Image 1 (cartoon, each protein chain N blue to C red):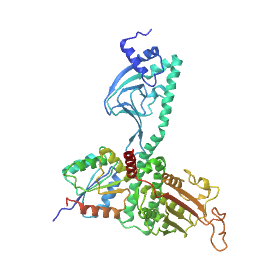
Image 2 (cartoon, rainbow over the protein chains, first blue to last red):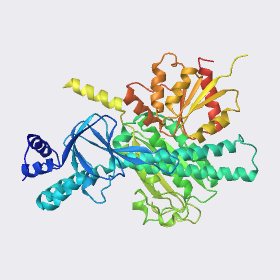
Image 3 (cartoon, rainbow over the protein chains, first blue to last red):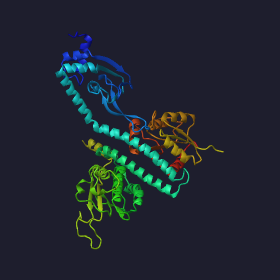
Image 4 (cartoon, rainbow over the protein chains, first blue to last red):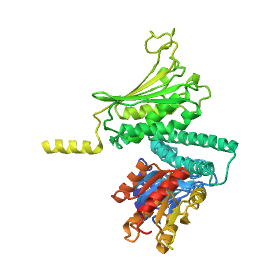
Length: 413
Length: 133
């Protein structure tokens, strides 16, 4: 029979305040208290380390602990820690001490001075084996805790992706820089053949960098995040940047970009960097699916309530069966052939336009050549092109405008 | 004869440093390099550069930390800073403002990669602004 000391009964009470032992009766907590020790850690110290043998689990009693996972891509990049969660008093860390193969899956690092109750994992496992009712309750709590960590997965993924993105983009930027330095003759003269190969390498590396950006954007693309960037912008500037973005790709495929600008440019509210992305993605999409030697038209005009931008190509059109799916993540049409891309450009464009309370529409164009079926409506059977139309309202508000409006309505009350 | 202007280039990626040096050594400047923010501040304490080309994500002290120190020390306030990074400008400025409560005071912000001709053009422009020439 266990001899209860004042110290162990105090520890047992403290255990019962924790999330994992909250449903356990005092008698069992008294037994578990015998497997416990108290430990303190300074700010910056590790309580447990990812990949090491999991001997103890810990209940945080005071202070705050960050759960971190090491991210390292390739041998040459600096390993970084991604914070995946914070543990506060009465919560636990180190459940790997109860679950095979008993290896910690994250590191726990103190962000403040911390006091913990450390529980010996092997003793607790033996106790739970011998007392299945208690074991079930503890495992119930652990399941809830692990489910909660899974719910955090989206934010964890976003954080991971931002690190991954940087880790992938940095070496690519270095490669691209070297190529440009060579192309501009800073490392000696090039033969025409070498020059062409370097130009091709730059195009491929730039594509890859864009694709990495797309994956990261997909994780970050929340409307409220886009709306925080709302500001007054000049469509002329954003449109020109988008054309510049695709200039090389168009030249590569012998596609001419024909611009029909609005008669007057008027300032508009939106997220300019994101809108540039919409137009760049639509132009890139048009260029990719256009036969060489054809034209892509980029036109815009202002209506009373909306700004309208169209990107029109002379490609084969979109298969009517694919139409409902083209704005879905990672969708690639069956007629894509060997066109590069991952099927994210259009879905990203739609997310951005949606965050602007706008619309993005697509239609196949009828064949208007002599003898062509020019009397067919919208989704023609023999299309000779596709037209994407973006409509964004002109009454969007910047964060400052929203703040002022709120202040005015508050002072009226 | 006047001394050539000094450019301090700070980046943890040796290939990026090699690239920038290869391009800028064709121009009449003195160049110095550092691989992290702490080393950068030590070098600035020895000689104030006419231009600082600065990466943001670096070990020991990151670029935002360097900007904070530069802009809070009267002797360094006039040094133009060119950010050269893979971090998107909006996100970077927001982070600095959240951490310090003030706007990020840098004279140029370039996302990597930068073409040699663009780099030379921007450097020439910023050195025209430098008060240390």
